[in-house]
Image (cartoon, rainbow, N blue to C red):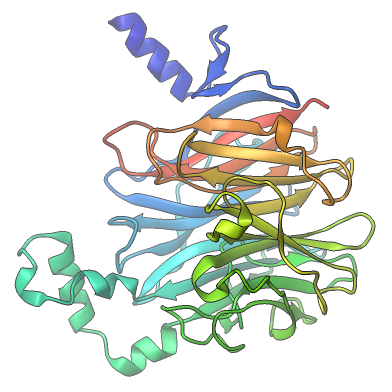
Length: 393
């Protein structure tokens, strides 16, 4: 019994112990090697979700997420930040960046070439669907307290704070400027292009946000030419008529290739995509103004996060919530034109589908830290997890 318990704890901490697997993922795979997997931030009894990671100008790693939550949907989510000064080995306690009267969900972050940090998130009132029937709420239950909280909110307050936003920090994330509205939303936020502009590819509106500024049911590209102080829509991604964009497409992310194209992958729940729960891809050759028709690329999972590695390869990471559950990665050797699905990389396994939203950053030594959310042990609420790994070919 002691040996079994020790093995479980060791695997949780990312210790290999000579084993062939770490947390349900083969340690050595066709194109990758897993170094360690471990929790980065746990808030006992609370729920964490939807992270993004970046590297600050001083070399610190910053991870942002929605934390201190009752559960997956609730009114109390906060945008929180933790930092690591030792390459992801240890992390600070979480600090709040955004704590509005609504549910602060998702957290994207990017470091600009001048050191400015830009983070993005959205607020939600989706929790109201759980408290519509006051008579069914049991006193003392989480939903009862959601109702008590919601009863205090004035309509004009909700109107002012509901939507998608971004904020800037010029001191490494210690303080943040006032929020500005964005015309779209996506979990991992904007990226910076080689020409200095910020590009934000996101959903323009859905059932919870009827219109973020560009109409409803579109995947649009917005730009900022003033380093995140303001945004304007410059393009829209087209989809085949078989896809219902409003209902079936969400949560895109973009990357700029070494040959100057922009590649975007979009979470898609249409059978047209090949897997029902997967990602489709579109590309732009003119800085985000026009886009190719979205098409399947064989990636079985969602939502995507894309980065360009130091050697020019593209990396897409995504969660899988059915079948072979866990966090996965896939490489492209040709600037995103094709993806090496045959040699897909498994980063970690899991026992249920409440997981995902991985995001990656490449470290100076070439290793990759991918952060994501899922529970560490059965019976616990979700936490922020991380896997350090390397591409081997």
